[in-house]
Length: 221
Ligand SMILES: Nc1nc2c(c(=O)[nH]1)N[C@H]1C(S)=C(S)[C@@H](COP(=O)(O)O)O[C@H]1N2
Ligand SMILES: [Mo]
Image 1 (tube, protein in one colour):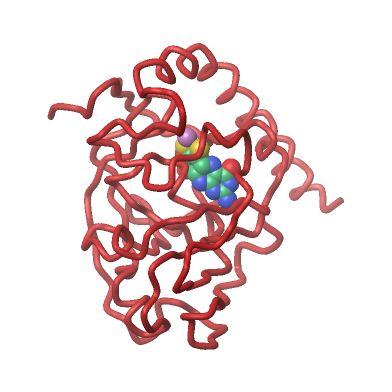
Image 2 (cartoon, rainbow, N blue to C red):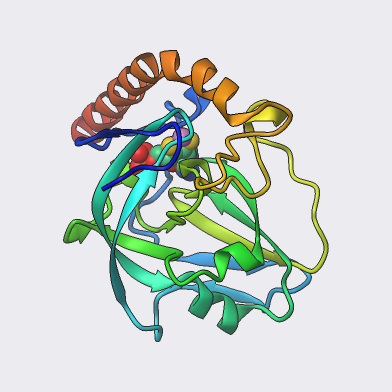
């Protein structure tokens, strides 16, 4: 299978993100609730998958730092179904997570058939590692749009102001992989070179912090 421009395949799937999120974890992975807000949102607090069809899909995952994993088997609910039920006339959507992570997407991009609110990966429930209890999966967009530990969705008619998680240049409003929209202000080929040397360190950091977190959880302190 061919990969999008600048991406390199790997077979393992690391815990990953901006370094400052390595030490942040969801409060409760068994809390299957999502909160809906925004001026185009209909008030809702509940299980986002209840009453909506379950879909399974195999898709690739593309991190902006240039690594890709192919053939991941996700299961969940189409975001388009969720949006049809909980929003009227949204143009922009803010997705927020239990660990404080957030991102902004166009409602039009979220309406694509391959965008899911997923609760399972490769046949088992999501764990802390990959975004329990719910995460967004948007395969046509860089991984930083696929919010893990999703707990709040805001539907807006106008573009809301939202502070980036890191530096503004890292956050492209659409982040389409096929167009290499890695970030703002700088071209994709430049960001490739900037990000690639950071992969190893970042994934080690994320793995270490997860180990620490799990050790704490088993000793109950
Ligand atoms: N809540 C939350 N979602 C997040 C992140 C994060 O730090 N926190 N990092 C993003 C980035 S940059 C990537 S590449 C993917 C990594 O997903 P993974 O840890 O399942 O590999 O999650 C994205 N979603
Ligand atoms: Mo990423």
